[in-house]
Image (tube, rainbow, N blue to C red; front, side):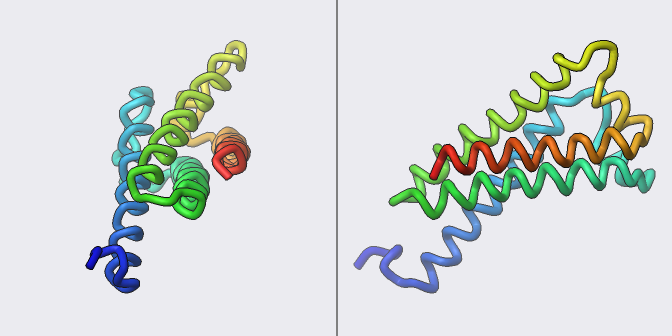
Length: 135
């Protein structure tokens, strides 16, 4: 008997894999933006970082969700999730480079809520686009 044939165990395993991919996405994003420290910003009670992290989590969740429901194995879901998470980070940095004279990371570090809402929307766009591409 395959352990994945037991629905309760299968649910737990898929949920843990999805959560793990989400945490990996947060870690990779944190490492990719040295301009600000997410932990420090949260300790300072920065609303801007909360808005950005909400958008990032929604984006990663959309990517992981689509990877899981449109994959026939955990390995395939992890592969598509990883590709989507890396694309998420790359596209964030690409948009950041395309904004002349303005850096999103610096604006967020300065607690600029307007910039934070822009990044929130950007992450929604990216997550939905990648999720749609996966499906």
